[in-house]
Length: 344
Image (cartoon, rainbow, N blue to C red):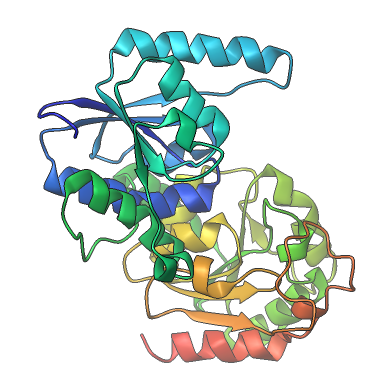
């Protein structure tokens, strides 16, 4: 299917969490086919997830504008892809534009999921077994690796490669934190929308209690768009909390999590970043989505979730009083964190 020593374009998913989860498949493919030269194609905001990954020989970035400029940008990246003369492409991102890109660039072997939006542009469609459809999303990506390698790949998990500079920066900031208790990073945002966010007042209750109980050193994490929700949390607190939100790179924030060994997060990219690190346990707070598909990968994490009559849903902003998230209390999160702190 893919010839020996081929140069292969890998279309990385657009969401940070999905990009992290797809690295399990990339590791598997490179392990079984070390002869392949893998080149990543990714949006700018997920580059940090893959930049230091040794499985990739190179990384291409693609940041299209809105229409009508998007059409010109599409043909521009197609022209760039064609110049690289790729032998094959693997779509981890299942959408029309990505599939059309490989087809338009004349890549002979084009592999992706068998889906009505994309299968017209693919040379090889991967069928998803019924049981796989209800499994964790990491296994969806590994099924593509099975198809590419011709092997039943096992034992591969998402990975994130940090530099020693990232770790040194994180260590320096941790040393500046007041108090002597455990470092507890909190990611209170979610790029998908507010429906995935645990209410800010509940985060405030948790933080005040964690400081009182454990003299905890709290660190807020997230991107530029998360600043608003963290400012609301901060306004409800008795003490000023150190925030890296929108100020430090994803890699440095990941190094903070790695050093802390714990992270509290909504169903967002940072739970998958955390799960890709070694010896990190996560308290994942879920609301409208299905934990079985996108919970942090692994067995040592704690998922908090309350099913409600309106669950599951795909609303970005809850029209129903946010009842699924409101059902999770600050005491629930405290108990989960206490379990992790007492078992490490």
